[in-house]
Length: 255
Image 1 (cartoon, rainbow, N blue to C red):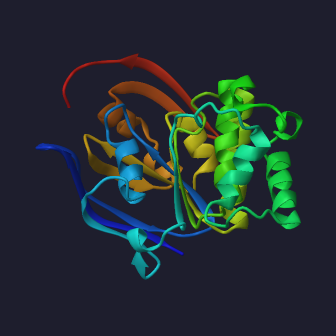
Image 2 (image 1 turned 135 degrees about the vertical axis):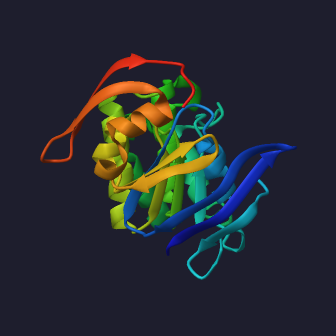
């Protein structure tokens, strides 16, 4: 199912946070990145799409509204799951079993095992959450999301607690999920080189509004970095769309 956002506005009290956000239709089977400086409204946009904030404007999933499609949209915050006495396996199993009652089918156990293998958590499946590193806990959150097979997966900085190896692993897993489900995956991300490598389309936010939307090559430009991030930089895209970015200076001059 496609995801559509039209004329979305959100404010904290009288303070505008998001203004007139309209985005091209997101198609299932692809991963999309939301980038921008701190305070641009990236996380707030995801929470509005997930129905966690009241907002004006329209968010549609297929021909209906996101609010009317429970279970189809899943939002994964930056914070890892809360520490519990449950094991990794039990946490992922409970995520799948929500609304399914207490009886656990053999197929469900096999599915949870398969997902844990996929995200590289088989070796720690019997450990309690409190025994895991922050990065491992973040991978548990991803497993809890994937096992539920949402049509739209919203990820808020999913790599924030991960080292470089696991950042790349996480983003590749998310992209594979988008393609295989197929699902719309929308993720906020700070690292523009990761956005260029994994996202089919990039949404750049600035001061609560949409600055530009397009492919990584169209969007991640030296001019955009000057206007949005207030950074002078040199960029280069290789033939395989790998981005090399070298920031040369930052400045505070109003644009």
